[in-house]
Amino acid sequence: MRGLVAAILRLPHRCRFCGKFYPIEEFVGGGPSTGYCLRCYGDLAVKIALLRGIRGCQECGASFELLTARAAGADVRMRMYAKDGVWQLLCGACGDSYERKRLDMFGSTPYQLERDA
Image (tube, rainbow, N blue to C red):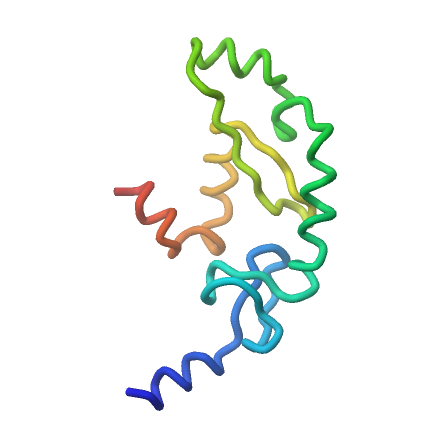
């Protein structure tokens, strides 16, 4: 059993942000489908700081005011994705669309399995 675990840990892990495969030594935070390579992890704080000036969904352009009106008083749920090499904030509809297009990234994750149930 130990040999199997050691063999699995030696397999390259895929970075959630850039999508490239890296050895475990160059990987941070979580397992093969949930972590980041060291380069992307280092850039994470900078990229999140860039989101502070966002005024709504970066895909469809809907403002937070419009999204709030559509939600009829409920909280507006936004999702953050590493899309096209940049962190983007998307509304629920745009996020669902993006996840369907990126099954290579989301298809086998616990998050997607829970959503499909």
